[in-house]
Length: 141
Image (tube, rainbow, N blue to C red):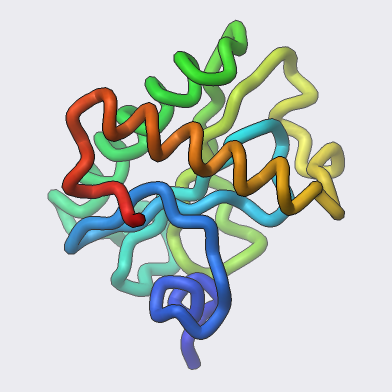
């Protein structure tokens, strides 16, 4: 059975995509820990990060770093968080989000009903930052 992330990747469930290539996608979390909270997700369904083929995991991390750099530039937090938890969805995903303190790592602090207009704006700001950084070929319209 397809994971919820596979359904998002396949367009069966809507997502706010900021990145897309042949191996991974990046889209905003529906329960963000901060503005622009992005999930980097392999297209291939892999349960745990330690099971990812060599090359795919490294590509996901490089993509997370690229997106994280834009999140830092756009939202200006003191830190950009990177987490791999994997309990919510059995499909490898890397959380990349701004962090103003340790509470940014506490999923009980995640927004449960974020403003859709604000999230649309955050996604567009990340897409614009990625285009400005020379990654336009991976930025969905």
